[in-house]
Image (cartoon, rainbow, N blue to C red):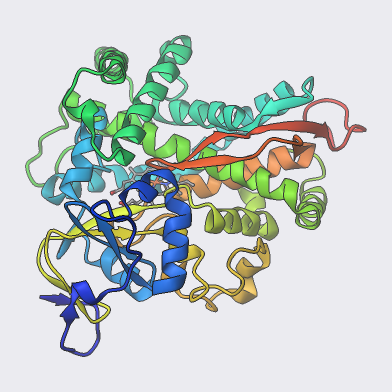
Length: 468
Ligand code: HEM
């Protein structure tokens, strides 16, 4: 048995772990579907860092204690794995890419993909981020109202498509169609992840039929691009190029076309909605916290003076980074992360049998008063450089941790703050009276409505897109 305690203790039975009772037979299953956020937040406050979640047919536990979270992450790919039933639901749309694979297949693919996301390599994306920021700034110039979710989605999709395919002309021509296909796939994956009975997996529902058509469409685009690149013999320094040229150090084998397509689809899904949602919430929080917004604007004006921010500016924009981190603390895009022990483990003094479902929840962890003072207040100063070390490393886990930590962390921490800085410098976004942000639990935080905002140019005296 693997244990999270430094000292051996006599582990208690998992049934002794406290948790909300919910309804007879159904337990908390309906609440988990309807309003998971309130459920897990309240349960964490009431029952502590490990909570028993009564779900029919499941032995499920919610973790928010940083030491237990650390254990779950660090043991992943050893005593703990990604839960096969949940992964199976996502497989249908994504195939066996990095997010859904485990064991040797995952290890090989992670070795191949890791080098794509080093800071040095990502620096090459700066012009692309500038281009996207500038296009967004220009597009907003004539608007008084916009949908910030749509706008961030568009910007991030552009970035991820360019980053994967080097702004290839063929993909740009097909951009709208590829984007539509991806959105159908996202919807499919999100529905599988949260539905009590994943009937789309077994029945030819309209959504399933549509997503299969869309998946084939994306695979055709990827297949044609791979074929064209192979024929041209050109070397591209993008993710597709890396995947195509990668070989397994142990066997020397290259990735097959279906394997490449699985990874590309995975990158689309994992890399687009997450960063877009962090930005939507950042603007949402700024509109509700005028003092924070003014301080952010003062920093942007002082450091950038109207020009677009670059990578070398980031060390001089500490408050911008703090705002981005504090947003992800309150609204972690990946709000729930699933794990399953492959052997009995001891967690927090309890024996957790293999095959249980462990929910590591960034949402609950980030909002627990045991981990943070006044956890519900929006206070970017928590992440001030001098505060480093005052909170447990695993009390802040927007990108997960351990061997399966987000491979795109560096990219997200580049494009997110740079877009925030570029846009917040030129515009103020404010909630429209009556618009209420409604979120649902999908694979990532799913913002359902309430994202229409009014847009006000901040520096009307600035003429032209980049003039200071
Ligand atoms: C704010 C933005 C992002 C957040 C909050 C986020 C969050 C996460 C989290 C929490 C995990 C770990 C899931 C687990 O342990 O089961 C993860 C994994 C992953 N992320 Fe991200 N992510 C973001 C952006 C990105 C970007 C930009 C990319 C790539 C383009 C990306 C690609 C991936 C991949 C491929 C994995 C699977 C890694 C593995 O299992 O080896 N993510 N992400």
